[in-house]
Length: 396
Ligand code: PLP
Image 1 (spheres, helix red, strand yellow):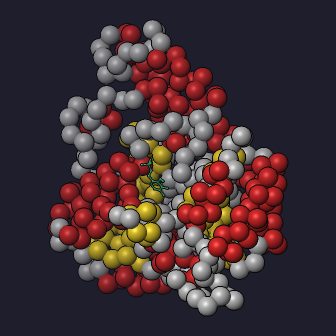
Image 2 (cartoon, helix red, strand yellow):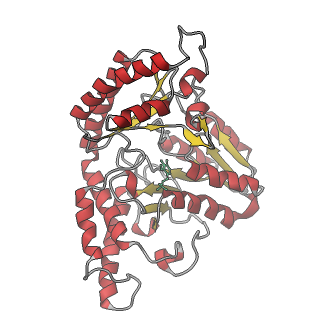
Image 3 (cartoon, protein in one colour):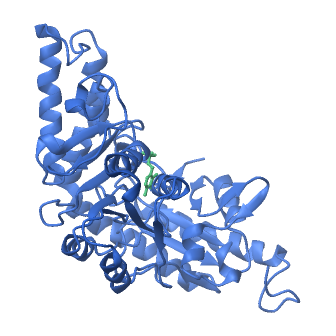
């Protein structure tokens, strides 16, 4: 059975070009430690420098503003907890209700430690009220620091936040702005000169580099304590011997994304829109979740009312189709997604939300396959469901 992989917001296939670029660093000539004094290590250090330049170019940053990390979870934690350690207990933290746990959990930890912390709500389309952000920042007394951590694009719905405007608001109030840019990477341009955030996190495995490599951009003049202490790597901002093969892979993925993004975004939008139109045309009682006008080109989140997203994902998995649900199966109970709930999606639709997320390796034929296989699955699950508009029980 062939695999149709429509779960690219969870992780992506490593690009063959990325793998080719990495392989020499596992071989006998390029395994040196870039911090070594000898020429063997120094040769590797020069490749590391070039990789840093390529990664910086991807987001229009300076090379010394890039810190390589192990993943975006580390980058998010380093940004949020490192800022809190630098400023101490007076730091106020503002984030949103729809962040990834890699941001929400460190922010909640800071709240538990006594920091003032606020999670901004979103509206029915998953968008923020920027007047509320402005008003909240206006409340901060002069001289006391505020860290704002707002994601660039949502991993579940693909909703893109207006980061340029958010950065202007934060700058006007002197707030420090961190953005989790994990999901926008490779799907739409990111330019830290046009959108002057203080810190930005990305993860290689979301755009065709391997799992286990991330980056944290830190604008010159932004202060934070290092998350990992030890050696002098990354200018003493992240100790630990650099993961050279993966950094080389990340740089190649950045180069591929930089060169191919515009073309790929057009192809992704065409496939995503065909999938969306096909589902809406063939399946009744379906709603698209999230702001359709400001959305990643590859992401479609839909709720099939009266049935469970998990059941849909399992049935499609049997047909070789990989998708995600927003729900997490926690301690035996099905927890609806915090993102979909924050958007106030009606209860009949919350549990039936699923995410399709595409990449450059998907094809229109795969979209057609899903459009053929999905409607009978939905019809069958609806027949089996005790809930429905014409059944005795209309809600969960
Ligand atoms: N932030 C967002 C928005 C994500 O989607 C993810 C992964 O799904 C992460 C952070 C965590 O990334 P990593 O797997 O690199 O730790």
